[in-house]
Amino acid sequence: MVFLEIDLMTTISADWITAVAAIAALVVAIIIAWKQIQIQNEQTEIAKKQAEIASQQLNILNYQEQERRIENSRAKLRVEFIEWSSPKNFIFRYALRIKNEGKTTARDIQILIDDRPGNEYFAFFHRLNEGDMPLQLEQNESWEHDMAFANGQEPKFNIKIKWSDDSGLPRSFEQRLLPRKETPIQDLN
Figure 1 (cartoon, one colour):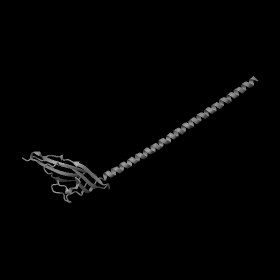
Figure 2 (figure 1 turned 135 degrees about the vertical axis):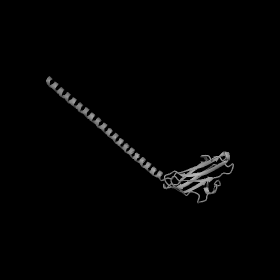
Figure 3 (figure 1 turned 90 degrees about the horizontal axis):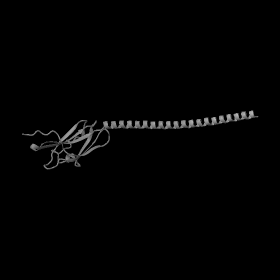
Figure 4 (figure 1 turned 180 degrees about the vertical axis):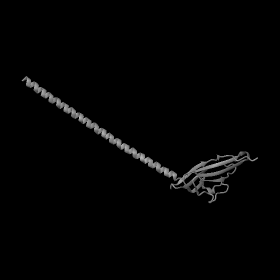
């Protein structure tokens, strides 16, 4: 009987160990499956974020290309108020210069000086006639017109220039202009 008891105990212990091992294997399998699901979810999130980033990069490239096309279809007018002077001989000469530094032609140019059309502004030597004002400036083309100011009148004014170009967008430039000195006029002896 003792032999039977030992054999029964061995069988129960072996069954118990097998059951515990099976449960442990099941728990390990469940943990591995859970971790694989987590890793797969993380990889799916990473793939979504990578797709978002790629889409954003494509949008940025498209935007940059569109901006480049628009920039290449824009006229860019630069305005200068130039002073040539020889204080020794009391000679002062002023000129308004407009230059198109853009990539295309500026059309339908309108010049407003102190909120008045340029041809009505009193500081021009010879008032600008309609034909004197530039209606368009090609790329790198400039236009210049002499100006005169009364003694004691400070040579400064507000200027607004409006134009159109190939971009199809209305363009304008507005600034308070003060004279910028260029090479002085040679002193007369």
